[in-house]
Each structure stands twice: as C-alpha cells, then as structure tokens.
Amino acid sequence: MRRILGRLWKVTGMVVLIAGMAMSFSGCIDTGDKAEGKNPIKIGVAIYRGDDTFISSVSSYLTSGGKALETKLGRKVIINIADAKNNQGSQNDQVDNFISRGYDIICVNMVDRTAAAVIADKAKEANIPIIFFNREPVEEDMQIWDKEYYVGTDAREAGILQGELLISEYGRNPENMDKNGDGKLQYVMLEGEQVHQDALIRTEYSVKTVLQAGIEMDKLGNETCNWMRSLSYEAMLKWLEKYGSAIEVVMANNDEMALGAVQALREKNMLENGPVIVGIDGIKECLESISKGDIYGTVKNDAKKQAEVILTIGGACAEGKDPKNLVPELDGHYVRVPHYKVTKVNAEVLLKEE
Ligand code: BGC
Ligand code: CA
Image 1 (tube, rainbow, N blue to C red):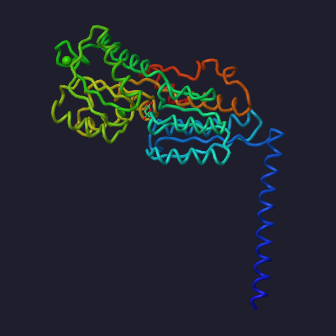
Image 2 (image 1 turned 30 degrees about the vertical axis):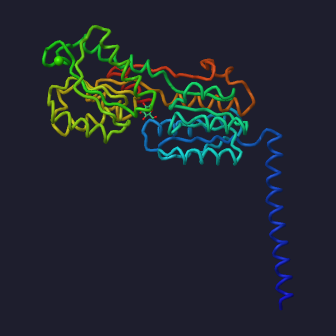
C-alpha cells in the first residue's frame, strides 16, 4: 500500500512539474512578443486617495487617455490604478508590486510627498521610468535619476489667478463685496493639507495678489480642511455662527472646500447675496455652481491636460524615445500645466466639454 501511495506521489509531482514548466514556457512566449515590440505597455498608477475628487478625475482621464495612447502607438496599453487610501506604507507596497510584476512605467501621486526618495531609488534600481504627479517631491528627490519626472502645476500661479478673480469683481462691483463699506474685505480662508505644496503657496499668493492691488483685507479666520468638503462645511458653519453676514469673501484652496462653504451658507439661508466665493480646480460640480451664481469663480487645474502629459511622457519612455521631443513643455524633470480663470463667462463652455 505504502509503495502505491509513494508512486502516486511521484506521479502527482511529475504532473505539477510539467504544469509548472508549461507556465514558465508561456512566460517565454511573452518575452518573445516583447522582442517583436508587440507586448503591452503596462502603466502602474499609485494614487494617494481614490475619494479625492480632483485625483479621481485625473485617474479617469488616465484610463480614457490610455485607450487613445493604445490607438496612437498600435500597442496595447494596460493601466492599473492602486489606491493607497492615504497610507504611505500601503503605497510603497503597491509600487513594489508594480516593480516586481515588470511594469514599464510607474506613476505616483505620493501620500507623503517628502517620502519620494525611497520610491525613486527603487525605480532607478529596476530601470523603470517614474512619473510623480500632483504631490510634488522635494527638489533633491527629483534628481535621483534621469528617467524621473514631475507633472503638476505652478501653485503660485493658481494663487495669483484666484486673487485676480477677486480684484476684477471688486473693481466691477465694490459694494457687492465690501458689504459693510469699511473699505476692507473681511474674508475666511479654507486651506488644503498643510504638507501639500499647493495649499501653502496658493494661500500666500492669493492674499498677496489682492493686497498688492491696493485692496485691504481683514482675515476673520482660516482653517485646515485637508481639501475636504465635509471639513470646510463644518468650519464655515462655525464661522457663520460667530460672524454671520460679516463674512464678505470665502477663499478656498480647492473647489471641494468652496462647495462645503456653499452647503453651509445654503443651510443657514445665507447663500443669496452672501459672500463672494472662489475656489481652485474647476471640477464639474463647481462649474455648475458658478453657472448658477452660487460660486463666483475658480481657477482651472487642468486634470485632463495633466493626464495627457503623464501618458505622453510614459508612452515615449516605454518606446525608448526621449519624451522631450513629444512634450516641449518639459523643463528638465518638470512639466507645469498652466491654469486659467473660470467665471460665469466660460463655465458653461467648459461644462459642455466635460
Ligand atoms: C487639488 C486638490 C486635491 C489635491 C490632492 C490639489 O492640486 O487642487 O483638489 O485635493 O491636489 O493632492
Ligand atoms: Ca468690508
């Protein structure tokens, strides 16, 4: 009996061995395809949080743009998006996984933008081009190797344009803004994550721009709301309790937080003839609010264009080409996609393009 069992073991072992060989053989076929240049381009995208409205819009443009790239290159493009759910440890694991599975390009929207060196080092070691986006690594970490890129925007520009929105509305209709007529704008500031380059710089430059135009500002409050509507809604409710209709301007580092302020004002029946509200991003819901007149304006943070640039750089690298030839805006390791202002005048046109 024992002998029979032993034989059975051997036979099963053989079967497993043959199956294993077949599997590695099919792996060989893949490599064969690679030599002919027909293998798919595998792009791994690691995002900091999937429930961030702006980031989820970049993600969906990456997915749709992947299809366009496929047609352009005549090669299958696989895009795999991994959500770190705001945990840097998980994101590191996701990147490791992309590397071990032989991805051709890795795109990373860092959870903690100061922790990029570890990831860039690993990409360099594996010789996989890496494209950071939206959450900018510190300059030093962007110099780890030559196939390392950052795609984002110029936060200063966003702040300046947001300030200009207020300046032009003030010039056009000063009483609509300075409601108590004291010659100053009483404002509240809704801020993004303090560790994010866009939050601090947008705040600084928007206020600076208004002041430089000779308009006095009087800050009633500022609150870190981490880009989130729910937190800005809470902050705005608190300010409304305290200051009521004395708030003349609401400046938000992004549209989600501007929409949180709208929600609080609506709930308190103070939206009509209420403060002038400005945001940044140009997400769909904000464009709708602008065309209804609830939000005065925003600054477009072009998710579609940023996704296009990421894919053009990625596609070029995967084909062994110099991305500079396809993306003339590439300045060293950086591409900063320009912002533009959005008010009632162009909100509807943009909505149609959504
Ligand atoms: C956007 C925010 C977004 C953040 C995420 C910023 O550039 O304006 O809406 O939450 O990036 O990193
Ligand atoms: Ca005033």
